[in-house]
Each structure stands twice: as C-alpha cells, then as structure tokens.
Image 1: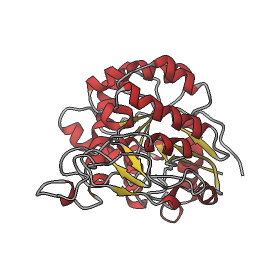
Image 2: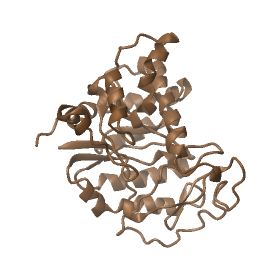
Image 3: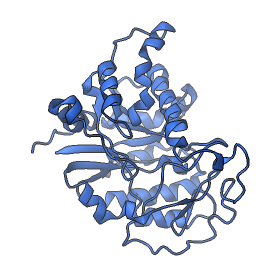
Image 4: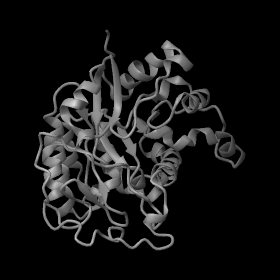
Length: 340
C-alpha cells in the first residue's frame, strides 16, 4: 500500500474559520479572497470527503496540509492561530487513510504549542517555502525545527503565497465537503476583494497573468530558494532533520553542475535527509532528479485536488514505483513500511 505525502482538504471547521474572517484570506460562500489576487471560485466537489476517500482507496496513508499559499501562517497571531487551530482539530478527526502535517503561526513562533500539536499524532510540520528561503528565515524558525528533531519528525516545505503584483490565482485553494457548512455568504469578507478583488485589472496587475503563472513561476522560485537555503544555512544547524521539499524542490537539484562551477561544492554528494516529492511533475522530470540524487530521496505526492500523482511504473519500473511510493515515504516519516 502506497503513501501520498501531499494533499489538501478543506474541512468544515477550517471553512468556518475562513468564512468568519472579514479580510483576506477569507471565504464568502465558496468565493475565496486573497490579497493581490482576483476572487477565486472554489468547487466544493474537489473537497468532498466521500469523494476523496474513494480517490484514496489504494493508499495506506494520505497526508493533508494547510494550503500555505493562503498566507494564514503569516497573519498576526490573533488571526492566524484560530484558523490553524480549526485546521488541526478537523484533520486529526479525519478517518483512515488520512494523516496530516502540522501548521504554525510564523508571527508567534511557539515551540511548546507546536510540540503539543505534534504529540496529538501529526506527522511533522509544514512550513511555507517563503519562511525558509534565507538564512534569516531559517534562524527565525530554528526553535520549531529543534522540536521536530527532538521528536524525530520531518519538515515539509510547501510553496507560500505567490505575492507580487503579477501573480494570478493561487494554488487553486479550496475545499469544502458537500455535507459541510452551507454555501451561503459567511460575512463581509471580500467587500472590495482586497487589492486584486475588484473589476479593474490594469497593466501588470493580477488579471494580466495566466492562471498557471503562480504554480510555474513564483512557486518554483520559492522551492528553488528553499532547497539551497536549507543546504547552505539549515543543514549545519540541524544535521539530523529530515526535510521534504514539494514539487521536486522546483527542480533545484538539477542545478548541481552550475552550483559546483560557482564554488558551491562537489557534484554527486547527496544529502540523504533532503527528500523531494513529485507533485505536478511527470516521469521525465522525476527520472532526471533520480539520475541526480538517486531514487532513495524521492517520495510520491499528488497535490490533490489540484493535480494527481504521476504514474512512474511504465517509465521507471515497478522497483522505482515501490521506492517512491512505499519505501522512501516510510523512511521520511519514520514509520514501518506497509506490506500488501
């Protein structure tokens, strides 16, 4: 039975927390409002629990996480923690095969609060790539990473808010089970819609970028920076921490030749504690990363409901599929490898 380390599911309590907000990020019915982006219409069917259980029928474990592109983690503590707490309560109550990554508030770094959440059974901590893409960012979250090391749990690095005036819609954020809260308006959220929520879309504004822009440009840039920042600044401080980078770390590992030519080390040295997951890529990209890092640090992730996990068996063979979907996630998560 295989593992998917990267899914999103917006549950009733989480939806209610977003609908109770009066400023972005917030939901008005099923319309999501984010700063600097046009309103995004969420399809509730994408996050129907029964439908997701059917899609996950072949999985031993499906890890869900907070949608970091929303920017919840960077809100002031009084706004961030209620949404994060609602997320934690809901995901901890999800049925098998679900598990979940913890989330945390970045404006109120609280190791004790993270420890308490992890001790309830969460798989590890997710942080936005924007929080760990520099030496300063890694210093700020170091107390949280120490908690993970103490518990032998991993870090999952996920793209954060796309940001910038040229960003398009976010990661297709949205989830709400069909049997969850009603889809009526949840308050004054979106009145004005934030900087990108109105009808005016001037040159260079959010409306000028195609819908794929955030996933292909800023998300990839963020993951690229996070990979190299952790290697340069995070690994010396946290030598035993296992880290998994979403979307193949933006293909950062493929830049090892350039890194070596610019004085960044010797090509061929692989950090076996730095994993990458496969979401939004296919066999060609996965094969290229495997040739660079080896198969042992690649794990399967889908990014459901926004993408599906690649089918690697035809191109890479059954042994590679087993490594990526079963054996490697077991090592990342420090859990026993399941047997069919």
